Image (cartoon, rainbow, N blue to C red; front, side, top):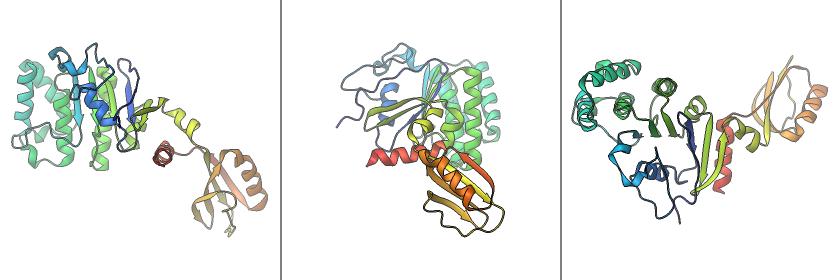
Length: 289
């Protein structure tokens, strides 16, 4: 079985693209190939004009890979010393190094953690330091594999805001994999979806709902308590005496609205699209079957 099978796409300079797929779809393998860590058995790839698995220094100095489940910093060194080691490896001049570290630690709110041993940092603090290490040499291309995995909600939000601002300011081309749809929705206008190593979708994030969702969500609010049987209209998502939320087939939305208005004391009615997270979850559940 091929981990990645004839997947083809192009990412323009400065794009922030989501790279999605069920577990085992081939996402991490693809990132490793594009980073030069794995050489494919066939096919080709170009990153910044280089063949990744040739691992030329000129390419390595212009890209970075951050894997949320792998440690890039030295566990038993203070974060500052790990960053200093990266400075030497990349040949970054001291004034530039100091300026970049000061800026990034301030943006990520970890200035006071530079002299703490990496193993003593919280997961959120460590991931922020890992991100700083990845951006220290100002890469033109950034591969992010689950950068917010395991982080609390506050840390996730901080990292997302930083990545969005950095992409806008530096124009770094970014490919992001994440199981958190909040990451994708806040950061990516375009998504690439693969399944079983094959390309499944490549296009605007907004079009996923239109293309793959066969339902809409209907929210009815009543002027008095209602004890109706709503199951015949659609799938009941949420219910209280004064309201109900239904998942309704797109083709039936107009008919269901008319029936509801004719049957119950409806004081408010709203029809919305399902969330991107819900659509992609349903999509992944479908392709697994």
